[in-house]
Image (tube, helix red, strand yellow):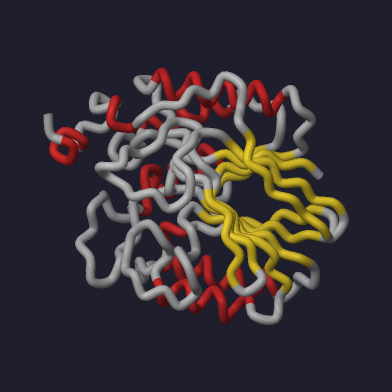
Length: 278
């Protein structure tokens, strides 16, 4: 089975360069024999602030000839709180989640793929102390009870930076308490890899026998003034190949997907003026 992984498309009618990159990625997917597409979140440029962007993004993704699964990102439904840090973005919004589900389907899911169970989770719910967070966790526990083969996990935010016990409190990653709770629930299962987006960087890291693969954005990289290098600042996509109980994750440079820099798009993200100055 051949699966395309895309992330952080940041689509909106006004974001013509990001749309152009996404269309190039869709053309590549439609022409290269993929069985499934998984979008790792931040589908919209800023759908949490401009809900019309959800439908604008759907119009672009409707060009796909391949089934699509999505998990939401912070730009789609708001961000989850991080203990000890002020929330720098709009908080999780249940109404925005409803719009996302209407446009793109379930925000958490289990997709059987031969021997594999592919599980998508809504990372924006972690630490919200909401009914939605509780429902998702209960669903995951029930879903795992029926899984006895290898598992691939898909989230918007990386599960960790270096180790499961990372103490860094940062909105880039799944909060520590939820990370440990996930690890406990998944203990005893054959978790092989975790694929995530959010960072706009490409990275591959093995921790305790699990591969953590960061899928870069199709839209842009983040300038060094705003974000340190952890992996590689590059635009593109990834290819997940499943063959029996084996898998491969490969970065893909996509024809027509141009390298772009967030700092050049202040009209789309006005808060950049305060961050980057003149």
